[in-house]
Amino acid sequence: MTDNLYTLGIDVGGSYIKAFLMNCSNEPLVIDKRIEKIRKRNPVSVAEEMINLLLEKNRLTHDDIAYLASTGEGEMVKRKTGHFYSMTTHARGGIFFNPGVKTVVDMGALFVRAIKVNNFGKVLDYKMTGQCASGSGQFIENITRYLGLAVEEVGEISLQATAPETPSGICAVLAETDVINMVSRGISTPNIVKGIHLSIANKVVRLLSSLKAESPIVLTGGMAMNKGMVQAVDELSKESKLNYLLTSHPDSIYAGAAGAALWGAYRHKLLKKKDEKIITT
Amino acid sequence: MNSQPVFVGIDVGASMTKVAVIDANKNLVGHHIKKSGTDFTATANLCLEASLKMANVEEKDIVMTVSTGYGRKNVSFAHDTVTEIGCHAKGCFHYFPITITIIDIGGQDNKIIKLDESGRRSSFKMNRKCAAGTGAFLEEMSTRLDIPLEEMDGLARKSEDMVKLGSYCTVFSATEVLENIRNGKKLPDIIKGVFFSVVNRIMEMDSFTEKVVMTGGVVAHNPYLVNMMEEMIGRKILVPVYPQLSGAIGAALHAMEKEPVRIN
Image (cartoon, rainbow over all chains, first blue to last red; front, side):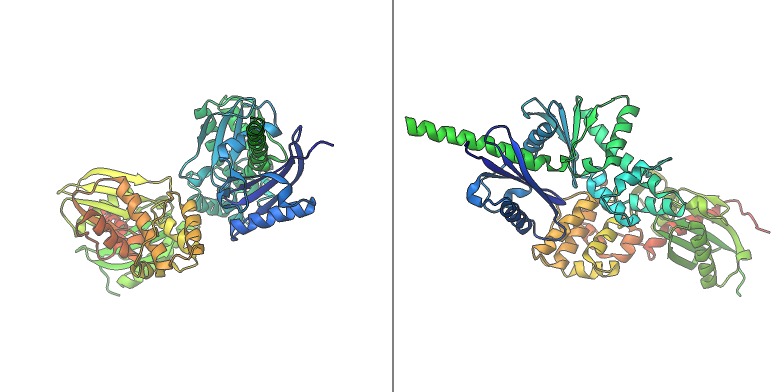
């Protein structure tokens, strides 16, 4: 029997916390995963609770975990072994889910990161949106709230659009007025929703073109789960003749957490090697 | 009814509709302010009715009406339209006929208009693509904090130790504000930080070397912003009697200057 090497990645995001449990003794193996919305709770206690639940469910204890790796805003996670930067964990997670991709785009609640990677998940270059929410998942969340929709259904609704109506500005707050006006003008919900998706996708495509991104590109993060979002990015990339080859993965939202678990295993093995060297010499 | 010729200016903003009625001597005799809502035309009509009543005149006494603002094309009874910049400049210069820099903080945009000593525009800047620093920013914060908009000013004045916000974007500032609440920061200190963010966005827009005039609905309801701005530039700032009406008054003054048209 080979020794198990359990690692757990925990990715504390702007809106969700993601936990990913792996066995990395040989080929990395996914054991279990868990996702939870933070809402207005304390992220530290939510993270702690999630880790405990995940361990309990798989009949493990903290002592069985070789490496508990945090990423994102997870620096305050209790009992962690180490912390990894989001850029590296998303890069690693992106190529784990979609081997062979050259660019990983993390579309999260607060910002979008575009990362160029090599075959081993090494970050070659990156760009991210800065001080503005116009390209963020938060934007979609706000709009769905105004329209009385659930975040989970907006993607499907967007796909039904026939004549999307894009908001005049790009500001996530000012778009609210635009949306109210669209509703009163009788624009259908799918057309409004698609317009918002296109407005965000425009930000993403501009980010990709300024990074000189190469295909294939994998979309990760919360917004990558939204089919309407992926379609909007695809449409705009074709329109601007960039013709990116886009992919996604059902577990895309776990890219950061999975990347953390994988890097955790890597660091654990390195440390072990060092220890063995010290013992033998 | 005291029948006398009047001139009407109507400023249909993205969030508020303002009407000013002036007599032949340029005195403000009637005015009304109402939320623009979704039906701009209906709101404009209601505002006109209310301000004519206040001026104690009838619709037939109107010599000329000029509309301005974001929704100026939606005013069915206006004879002509003039840009917001032209109207704000005129409205402010009427009260302060000197070289001035006008800061107008509106519901959805900020304008900085510089006028020379003859009232001619020498420079103009505007922020239109972003809610940061505008009334929409304060509105969003008041909703997130669950505090009525009109209480913000009084609370900000009570601050002893301001909490500075690091975010630029309104959406991210809202998250930051909630985090500060969770960390036990005091409400007045946070609100003063919110006000400071507005002042900062304006300071970033332009230089303020001339006499400064502040106008707009945000200034009318949050005069503490003027005090904070004065502290930043180290000089007194002028504020007209009706800061929210300066665009509408400017439009009415334009109406007076235009070729009179009689409605039959």
